[in-house]
Length: 376
Image (tube, rainbow, N blue to C red; front, side):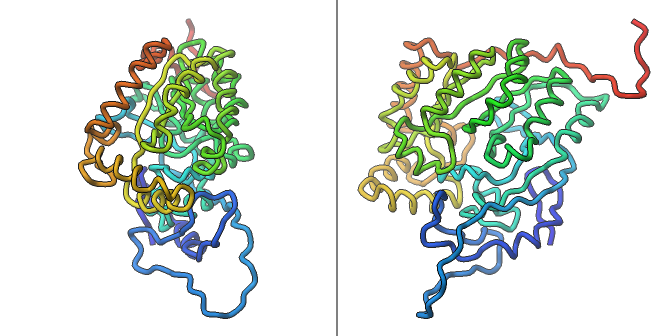
């Protein structure tokens, strides 16, 4: 059973993971956002938990499990007109941060896993990514351009503390003087402030910190294993002080739930040291829509109608419109109002929307043991 994935390689470990997956979800999984573990859209069979009247012991806590893969390549290419980069690196598949709205959740279905709790608890690490990246950058035909990291799943999720794959990737990029743009909610990014600061001062690195809400209760419910809002603002301050350019990402903005905080989030980010900002409204591709609506009904039942009606208004009556040029902004009155508010606040605070390109002229392939050294 081999399934394709975003990088095109076959995943020989999927059968093992399949038997760990699709188990009945605990009725209340502490520290997890999803409340279901439905089979992925490519599976032929599903499982459903049914109370048959027998008394059973309480299910054990839902632990995070990590498997490994050796990818054929570290750099993933894309040609999407909606994205400002054409290449990225994903040190991990799945994300323990467990943000209920995460648009990357459907990618777990490619692995024979559920976009629900499996996405938060069945992680796949790529420990050889730094080594493979080094080989790719050393190829004679390689031409440098900014590599994005964290645009799918967070490279600084809790598992990175032990695995240190992201640290290894940054070390390789630093050695090659290769530009990199990082997006994260994880406070572990401060561990790598030495590398990011040095690269940032050279025009080779920038970091985007996502702040979805300044309300710690709401933030904890939506993003159960992420640092709280104050901690993320501290991350901005830390990186700014070492010379790394920081973008405040007020994303996703949820109509009827967090959109009233937009200006306050931008102001807090500016005061912490961010020099640029961006915002994207909530996106609900594929299985994310059901997961989100279940979460919303549980935590904010009185807002379900308002939130979903606004979202559908932005996407032509659907929960989500994946069309290029619309999926990142939506359309209609509410979408236009959000962008107008954002541009006005950013302008008043002196926050840039666009940043100069990172440098590519410093790129080099460092000599390896046994290489012929240049005479001059």
